[in-house]
Amino acid sequence: MSKSNFAKTKAQIKSYQYYIFWGACTFAVMAGQIFVGAGYRSMSQEVKDLTEVIQIQIELEELRQNRSAIIY
Image (cartoon, rainbow, N blue to C red):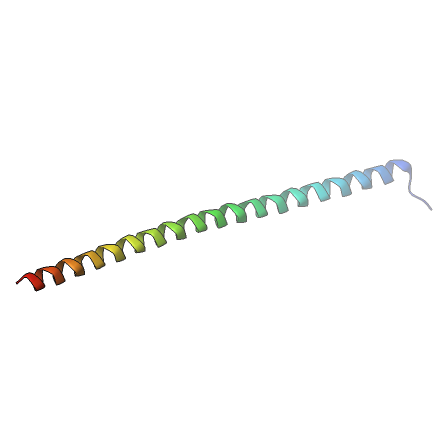
């Protein structure tokens, strides 16, 4: 017993839609991961810049304290 041409075509369309659906889902997840990764990279760079500014402020305060200790 063989399937009719209509049944074969219907199964092929169903299979095609299945792969389109899961391909779109995969793309959406990958795009989200890339978006989150880019945001994390940006945030980590901002934190790194902030810690460098804080370190410079601390060193500047130490220099000022040492300079005033030398004068007196």
